[in-house]
Amino acid sequence: MVLAYIAGFFILLFLILFIIDKRRVSNGIFLTFALFFTILAVAYGLMSTDSNLIALIVIGVFFLILALSPFLIIGLGIGLVYNGRLMVKREGRKIPNLLTLFVGIMILALIVLLILQITIFDSVWLSIFFTALFLILGYFSFLLISFLLSSYIYQYNRPRLKQDFIIVLGSGLIDGTRVPPLLASRLDRAMVFYYKQAAKKFAPQIIVSGGQGPNELVSEAFAMKNYLLDKGIPEEHVLMEDLSVNTLQNMRFSKTLMDDLKPKHRSIFVTNNFHLFRASLYARKAGLKSQGISSKTALYYLPNALMREFIAIIVMYKAWHITVTSLILLGMLALGIINISFG
Image 1 (cartoon, rainbow, N blue to C red):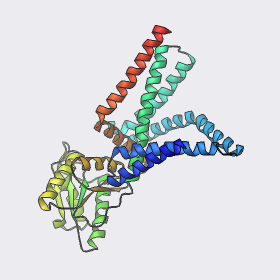
Image 2 (cartoon, helix red, strand yellow; image 1 turned 180 degrees about the vertical axis):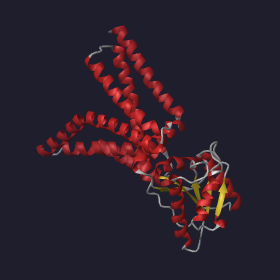
Image 3 (cartoon, rainbow, N blue to C red; image 1 turned 90 degrees about the horizontal axis):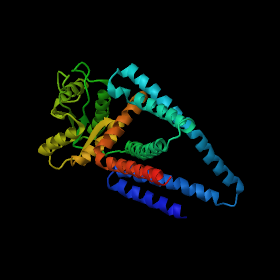
Image 4 (cartoon, one colour; image 1 turned 90 degrees about the vertical axis):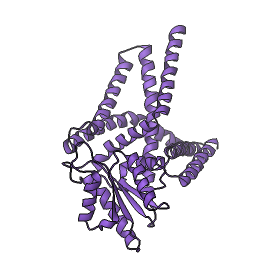
């Protein structure tokens, strides 16, 4: 019964905060807690029944998951390595494209080191090191699950067709002048929304947001505007914000532009699905009430992109995560000293 109350508390907390503002990292954290305690409550409820068969099934499922966990982790490592190689083949040998490859290799290497530690090496400090490492990995795995849940739920945001502005977030250009497929998908998604609203006799203005990078011959906003004009969007409905160099500036500079044109406005922003949730955090940070809509991304690209987004969000709140990691390490160090002193 206690587990059910705890699950209900976290579900209620998540729903209240989600209704107030969908753009919170804490929403995913509370939803993860809610799902965890709900699963525990259901399992405990089934175990408490008079049916021995149901109790046996629950126990069997638990041990099956426990037995399969090592194979799932190994499979995850192999899958990430494969995805990393695919990214290099299709997107080029750039450091951001190697992320899943590096993480996959790291997972497999840790498995090998753990097996060696259990079977060959016998060191207290090595055991403490692995304990600290797995506690830290467990902490960040929990945050990763929370982030993925937040990102998934936010995909279903459906802003009303009563917007004054549509902000399209820029990305890099091909050959310094042309819109790549990733950015084209954002612009195409913006046009779908534009035409739906225009059909109701209230055409919004599209703000193309993106400055000129070091290897670009024109600003991203300029290339994006030309793309929209070529697709038939009227020039008077396209505004350029060509000074921003990151997502936060996209939001802040676009807000300044909108405030100047119409102080009381409604707006949405468009980006790819993997980037949508983090962009919403920056919109909130910039003081925008905008919610986001997303364009689709090639499936092979998603693991790497989501991992980059997760790391970027971790960096946004790095002071908190450094504190937690430091406490874990200090706790394990103290445990090691006590073990040696009294062992």
